[in-house]
Image 1 (tube, one colour):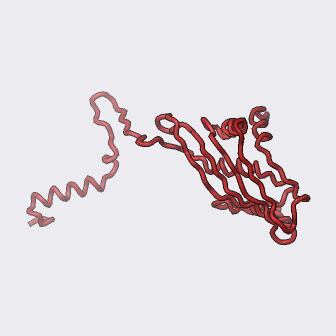
Image 2: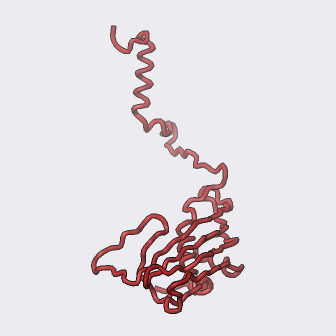
Image 3: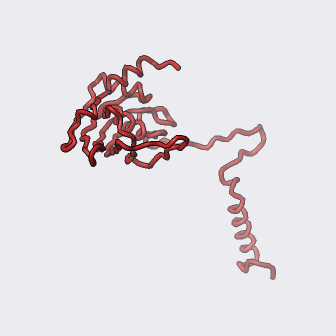
Length: 197
């Protein structure tokens, strides 16, 4: 499998690595990543967005226990992507706290699948390098709306039929609603008694 050189360059441009061996075991290591124009363009390419106006990832790598670390950071981004219905540009503001726990003694048993957790509180094995730039990209990718909509954009009904045939509507697919209407009509004809007299 070949890698797109532009995407590989984007990954390198957004990298902010911290070697675990050099992290303080007692004090948090603070970081403040703010993407410049070239990095925003690289990130837009990486995530398939029309534009990334800004990205910041500010937080710290905290020691936890004797050899474990936790990354806690605030992710803020302004992105633009096409509306999933009209293709009009849609601006989205993202603000989320991200947390990742890295455990030195975390072992995945052979043949066992890892369960994905909701949210950003995943537990992972401690690598030699914690790349907070990669964590920012990963978190942002998970927060980008899959189907953004411009204000007022709605899916309309599409009716495709043969000439002379009535189009099938959503209400036609609700048989109990039609039965309720028939019952109400019969009740009205029978003086509201709801049955035979």
